[in-house]
Image (cartoon, rainbow, N blue to C red):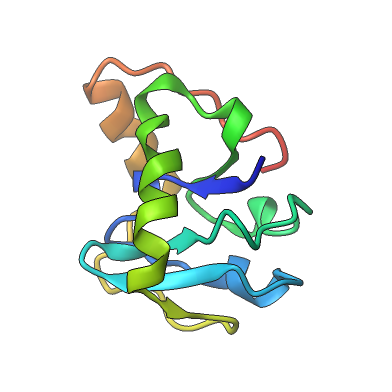
Length: 117
């Protein structure tokens, strides 16, 4: 099963994950402003997971419940994006991991971090 980019990436678009992907399965979206993974190309190598500063990438079978919808969203959205293979500047409004986690706590979510982060 492929890896999945979750909404933790929205308005951040950190791209360190793209530069380590051996199969170039990341796509950059402009609405929402984030990255997604082509699930048919992803080989589950896990190289991208520790590169994401906001821990937005999970193995699909380990997704926390509030992010389960992102399996389908990645599958649906990647074709509308542009393939990205190199690191670029994050968006100016990019959040930190602390900000992402605080937002999740504000929603009463108890989110486990990705296993390989």
